[in-house]
Structures are given as structure tokens and as C-alpha cells.
Image (cartoon, rainbow, N blue to C red; front, side, top):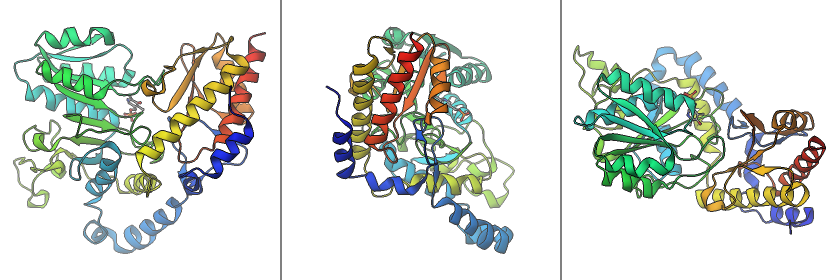
Length: 399
Ligand SMILES: *Cc1c(COP(=O)(O)O)cnc(C)c1O
């Protein structure tokens, strides 16, 4: 049986991370279930931006690079991301965009496996990742993108020609989660590097890049990390690869000593070696404010609440409209990220109707509607209300 609304209110009253909601600007009358697409605005950002504009850029001008910690920002923000993805300090930098970061890491991986020809991924991967895979293969002048069903990955890896396996950990459409440890081990057993896209995992599910042996990873700053529209992405390079794998898009910020203005690229031996360009300070300020919404919160707490919210949503929708929609996400929460997707012949209209009534999810073609559960700012009671509304709208759309 689904919990009652009163059960939900009791859960909210003793929610160990319930107070984090106050860290966000959330419009009145909206239940926001699209934080998997764009996280909400952190309350702290307005003052921080005002400070950067007034006291830093405005007052110090170019001296800000030294005096205001701007040069260090990609590493400092990277370290805050490291904590959320199970990486060590000094293994992550915030820079580039997701697609650019992926292209860089795939080219670096190809360089690490000179005798191998294939970049391997799955058919369901996000289109931009598929394009980046194709682009990196072409840019390398010798590689090829191989796209297969998940069930065929192990056989491909055993073939001995895969340079890198690259996967998106949580499927953007269904929320299905790959086994990061198992597939990384399979890649290594086949002699390939493992590259993970964490766009729908970072800040949503606990990750252990270190323990799972992940070689390279990347992700986006504007989804569960709440870094704002178009926020910088991040890239992770395992310590042992740093300085060994080349930065395939070298720029002066990745030089060991940018201000020597050396005519020849000498890559920094640490994670900074993977930077290309001048850090986008305003974007990094916003991303850092987004990351600071996780202050004092463990990913274990985030995950526990995420699973509870997903289960609650499924129970309520299942009880009231179970016969009328198909659940496109795994029912087993252990195999599901922080979203639930539904299929119906009329999902586009369902999503529009829900948005009109204050429940914001989204539609992904051909027939999926997605509801993301960002545990930092959602309450059990509002997810309960949203699920009841979803059920009612589904019932009406099924007549
Ligand atoms: C959101 C997302 C992207 C976005 O790429 P950008 O370069 O930031 O536009 C790429 N890949 C995946 C898997 C995503 O979820």
C-alpha cells in the first residue's frame, strides 16, 4: 500500500537533510521534478555574484586573477565535486562543457591505447555523447565508434580492439543505472580504459570513482549539481594517469607554467594539465554555490532520500493508475538513478497538463515522461501530491 500524506509529513519532520531546502529559490506553487535537467537557483548565489562583481572584478580588475583566487577556481571547485563522486582531491577540475570534456577524454584514452581502434558505447547513450564518440574517432585519424546493445559490451571488450569503453552511468531517458564497478572491471579485463559520463549521477547517487577503478570521467554542472544554465562541466583523471595521458586539446592554462609564455606546450603534471582555456569565473562562482548546497550532507543521505522519493512516487502512481502507464525505469531501486520515467501513448500532453498544474517534469521523445527526484529540496509530501496529480492526469488522458 502506498504511504498516506500524513506518513509523508512525518517523514519530512524527521528528514535529516530536510533543512537543505532553504538553500534554494523555489517558486511558490511549483513541485520541481526537473532538477535532473536544470537544478534550481541557490539562495547564496546572488550575494556571491554581487561580491565577485563589486569587490573582485569591479574593484580589482585584472589583479583579480591573483588576488581573488580566480586561477585556482577550476581546481577548488573540482575538489568540491571530487567529494561527491568518490575521487581524491586533485583528481577533478571544473572546465569546458560536457561534450568538450568527453571529446578530450576519449582522445586521451585513444592515445593511451595506440594499438587499438575502437571506442565502445551503447545505443541508448545520450546523442551528444554519441556525436562526441564519432568526432573523437574521426579526429584521431585511426579509430572507429562502435555502438552496441548493453548485452553485447562484454563480447566486444573480449575482442581485444577496444581502446576505451565509454558509458553514461545513469540513462537520461529511463534512469537505468549501469554497474560501474563491474563494467569498469570488464573494460580492464579486456585491456580497455573505462570512461564514465556522470551527468545524471553526480550529486544524485553515491559514486566511488576511486574504488571502482574508473580511469576517466566527466559530468555536467547544471543538473543535480545546481550550477546554473550552461554551468562548466568537470573532468576526472585518475591520479596515476595524470601527466601520463596527454591533454589532446592543449592550451596555455594546461601548461606547467602558463605565465612563462613558453612557445612549446609542456603539460602540467597534475590535474591542471587537462585545462585548456581561461577559467569562466562567473560560471564557476555559480557552480561553486551549487556545490555548496551539498555542504554537510553525505551522498548516503542523498541516496536514501532519493530512493524513498522514487518508491513513494511509484507506489502512489501504481496504486491509482498502475494499469494505465508503463514504468520505463527499473522497478528495483538498486538499478535506478534518481528519476522515474513513465510511458504512455500521450506523454507529451500529460507533461504539458502537469506543468500547467504546477508539477514540472519533462518529455523525451518518443514516449517518455521523466520525473527527477533531487533530495536536497524536495519533500515527501510534495512528491506525494505530485504523484497523485500525475495519476489523475494519466487517468484523464487514458479515457
Ligand atoms: C546533459 C547531458 C549532456 C549535455 O552536454 P553539454 O555539452 O553540456 O550540452 C551530455 N551528455 C549527457 C549524458 C547528458 O546527460
